[in-house]
Image (cartoon, rainbow, N blue to C red; front, side, top):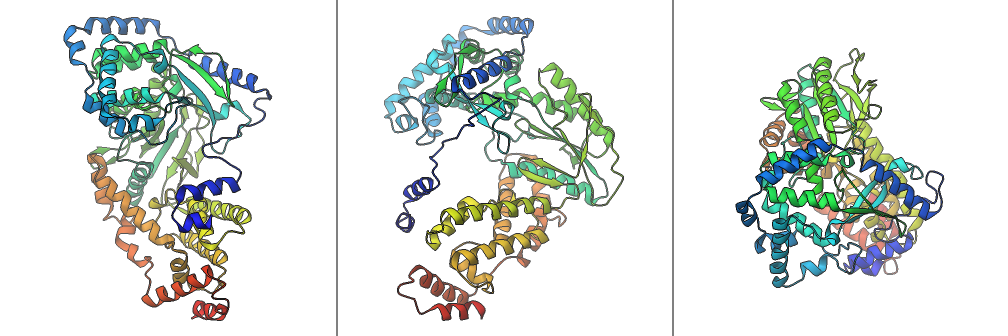
Length: 580
C-alpha cells in the first residue's frame, strides 16, 4: 500500500484498502432477513409484488385516451421527417458517458466511448428510425430494478428501500440524444435545483439560509415546511406527464416514442443474483437513468408556478423564494403562518390531482428566528397536525431554528471521531502517509462546510479534534504547534477549507445562468449576517498562514518520521521543534 501511494498508483492503493476492509468496489451487502423472509427467491418475489402494486397504482384511462387522440391528431409527415438525431448529437451524447460503467451485459461504456466514428453514424440512423416509427426495441426499453437500502435506515424492513433502474448503456445514449436535441422542452423553474448542471445541494440549502438570515435580521421570523413526498418518482401519472410534454411543444413523434417506451416495457427485480418474474407498469419514472429523472422535474414544475402565483411566501427583492426544490425535496418558506397555510393547501390540491402522496408525519416544520418568541403554531397538512421542530435536515444539512451551524458541526465532529477510531484500528500497521490519506478520504466528512460561519465556536472544537488526530497519527506531542501539524501532514486547516469552499459556492452561483442565484449570492457577499458575507468580509481573521521557518521544521519532522532507520537519534530534536 505504501509503495502504491508513493508511486501515485491510486487504483492499486484503493484496491489494497478494499482488501484490508474485506469489501469490494460497488458491492452492497444485503440484509439476511427482510420482513421475516430469509430465502432469496422469496425476498425477490416480495419486492416484485410491492413494486408491481406501486408502479400500477394510478390509472387515468380517460385522460390517456385523450392524450393518445391529441397525439395522433398532431402527428404529420413534416414532424416525422424533421425529427432526426444527427451524428453530432450522438457524438456529444457519447461524451457524457463515464468510463468503466457496466450495465450488467457484455458491453460497458468503454465500448461506446472508444469506438470509431462509424458507430456514431449507425446510432444516428437507429435513433432517427426509432423516433420516426415511435418504437423502442425490447432490449432497450426493459430494465431491472434493484432495491437499495436508504442510508441510516433499518435494512431489515422493506419500506426502507428504494429502487434503482439498471438500464442498458445504449438506452442511456438515446436518452442523452433526446435531452440534447430537444433540451428547450425540459427547462424548468429556477427554483428547481435537481438534475441541473452548474448547481449543487450547497447552492440550494445556501439559498434557504441566505433568505432566512435576511428576514430574521430585519426582525421577521420565517416559517419553513420541508415536505416529504412518499415514492414520488414511482407515482408519476404517465398520461399527465405526456400531456405536459405536448404542452411544452416537445415534437409529437418524441412523445409517441416515450409513450411506447413506457407502455410496452417489462420490469424485473434483482436481489442477490436472483431475478423475479417480469411485469408491466402504468405509472412512475425510472430512478438512475438520464432523461427520466428530469421528466419528474417537468411533472412537478407546475406546482412551483402555482405557488409563485399565490404572491405569498418569502421574497428577495422581486425574486420569489417561497418554494425551493431539489428533485422531490420541497421546502416552503413564508413570513407568517397564514401564508404557509395557503401554500400547504395548494400543495395538497396539487398532490390530489397528480396522484402524489405527501407524508405529513415525516414533514418537518420549523420557525427560524434570532430571538426567542412564542412557538405556538397551529398548522395541519393532509389532515395531520404538524409538529414544530428546533432543527430540520435538508439535503444532508442540519438547519437550526436559531440559524446557527452548531448542530451540523457537532454531527460532523462525532462522525470524525467514530470513523477515525475505526480507521486506526484496521490500519494500525500502515505508515503515516497512508493513515493521513485515509483520514482525508474516509474520515473527514466536510459535506456542507461551505455554509458554515467561521466565527462558530463549534468549528474551533472541530479544528481542535482534527489537530489532535493529526498528532496521534504522526506521533507528535500534544504541545506541537498547529502550523507544523498541517505542514507535516499536508492537510490544510479546517478554517482554510471552509473559507475556500464558501468562496467556491459563491463563484459557482455568480457563474450560473440563473438571475435568482446571481442576485441573491452577489448581494449576500456584502451582508455580514449571512455565512457567505461573513466569510468573505472577515474570513482573513481565521485564515491560517504559515511561515518559512515552519515549513523547514515541518520538512525535517516529515523526513524523520518517514525514514526512521536513518533518523533514529532525532527524536529529541523533533520534540524541541514542536515546543518552540
